Image (tube, rainbow, N blue to C red; front, top):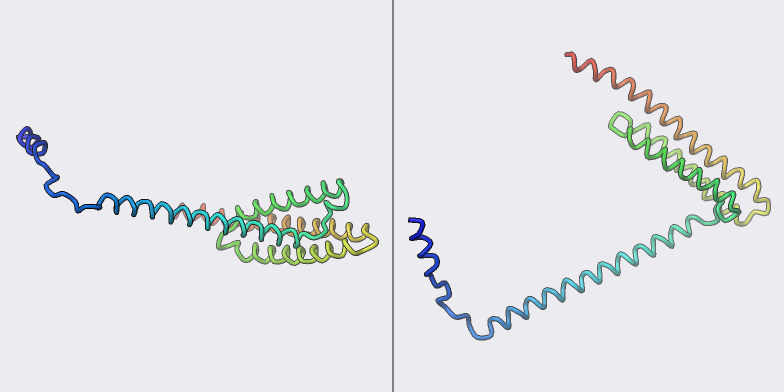
Length: 174
């Protein structure tokens, strides 16, 4: 029986009708048009991404203004230390984010945003102020205040999660 099916399939001629004249040419033209359209969309998308990148870079440069790294190499090192420490602590805070900790995290982050706004004002002041030493001290103090906020937040989050964990252990015994 399987041989009968094989013979039938092998002997069937599926090409019983001829396509109309010019069918293959029209088909190839359609394929070419689709390729051209996709290439132009890719070019447009790449241009938009490039423009967005350049715009965001310009905005960031304007917002950065005059910062500690422009004062001296030692200040650049100090600024780099504070920024990397703040970034690392923010990543640590994100590990604790859940429904129970959301409000405390958001409150602290808004406090940090206020400090960042003050820092932006200090950077503008640093550019125009004659006594840069006082402004630099205020900028470093601002970094320290941000770290203090993050340290206090991390301590509060650790305490809060320790209180939640024993409750979860007790639930397992029920």
